Length: 83
Image (cartoon, rainbow, N blue to C red):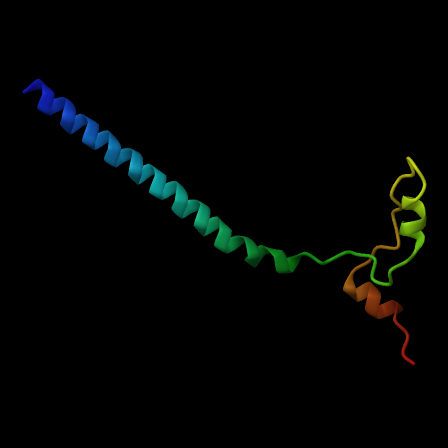
């Protein structure tokens, strides 16, 4: 009878372990689905006009990355001139 009890305990622990794994996977999927929803609030900052300053500085050894001319799309639109 003791062997049957051990078998039941093993089955229960397996069921509990699988349930915990399923919950963890569900949480990961849920977070993965919500992550893109938070991204639109962030503005993209980049080198919109392909300023060659970055390329020149990257050719110099141990030269720190320049701080500008990075900008948002709103900055790009403000700096763009119409022809």
